[in-house]
Length: 129
Image (cartoon, rainbow, N blue to C red; front, top):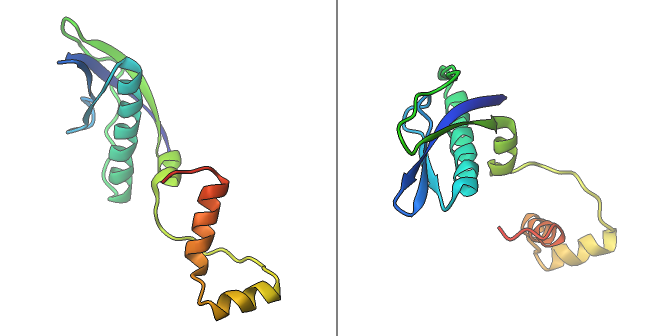
């Protein structure tokens, strides 16, 4: 699902704080405005993802928010489907083919197929997770 929520950015010591008044308890911060907005998107997506999974009512986004001196209101787009794909750690079964000779050698060595495939894919995709 795609959402847009208003957030309030505010100075927080040397960082930029973010609150999402429409989502109770949804707060974060960043090193600067850009970082704070990225963190806000992640926090909103995580909050909404959890609510979707628990079949909770998703609060309606306000059209605008009142701000105090030093605060800025802006909108943040969130996509819980994208967040779920990027953060879901459930295993997915894949069917694949390898040469028979390679399978025989791997079975002799008690090779952990899933682990090897995961490590190989991470290396191929240059992921450091």
